[in-house]
Image (cartoon, rainbow, N blue to C red; front, side, top):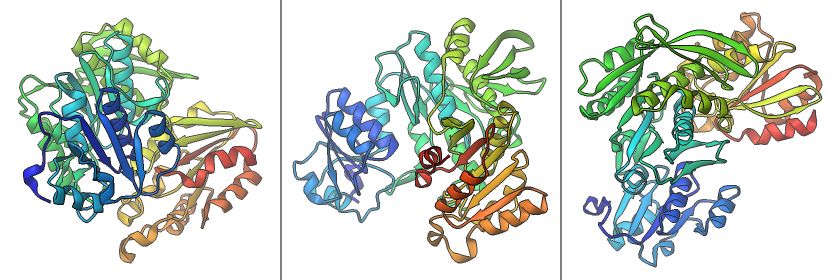
Length: 473
């Protein structure tokens, strides 16, 4: 790729997005359309709901990648990180001498553009935390924009253009594009940054945990003296990473030394109720529909960020109470014959453990049935093979599916769902292995009873198991 054309020209009217059906790329396309640009896009095998969504927004989207899609000569081509340098449109971009950039470059130029960004980073909790931040900014009347990797149910969208001075962004540590292997979050210059956690993930791009730490170190090193960092202090790795930074640093957590401290957490379904202590003084009592201590800590980070921005405790309280959820994050998909079906994105061991632990107290009458599909490039590898068994301790019944795309992983590195089930049984857990989704559905149809909560965890569609299960029960 000719790097001389990597960037964004001063005058842009027409923009083409390659891999437009990705969650973030689709949101960016819609944002650009709302900002007045002429937008086209393309992707491999266009299908609903994104194809219908783009059509409703008046965005012409081509089914399949071809040099012909660029024949009109757009002023700018935005290339998603799913695209390789050999993609026909990447090659055509080079051959035609067109300007091109990555998704975060475009977000920074067109969506942030002179606004103050709140960028949420971390291995876990980015989507929920950035969504809650957007809700607080909205309730404060600040007309925020947001760009988030999940659908906010309050807005039925994962983006909002807004006209106010703030924008909430989910800052991803995943690589940017084939021509820029650095993390996406390095393209942002936050007014306020939140750091929730640092653990090993994304084994397809990070060879080891040290490389993950280096990515976050690079992000923190970019923060200027004008920026504020809100960092979780229950993690020794974060403690090292935030030391001697130029920006203002505020910590949150459960320690007596936490600048923002969580206290007196109680569960009164449908709410989690908690006190917040700021610098040793009671700041306020808050309640949220979010389940689990990990989510309450996410809310605490948002409270600290909102206070720094100047939003009052009363408005923050109102926003937390009104915030419903993010789709695919502890989302109740339906209740049938007294059986609750819950969808969650959890795939990393920490997320699996904390999600199960969070949901259990909200359904005390029946069993918590955990259904897990290892699907990510990390969870399909045996990196966490010995860690997963303990993550299911709070579940009453466990269903583990064989990874659906295991052939993508080298044979010696593959995760074994059978071994996980054996290890769970050694821990005296009621666990079962399944080759496919149909067998899980048949098992649950026979086994589930009124009062049970079925928690389905996967970062993929899981063969539409949620809707099929609701229909089958």
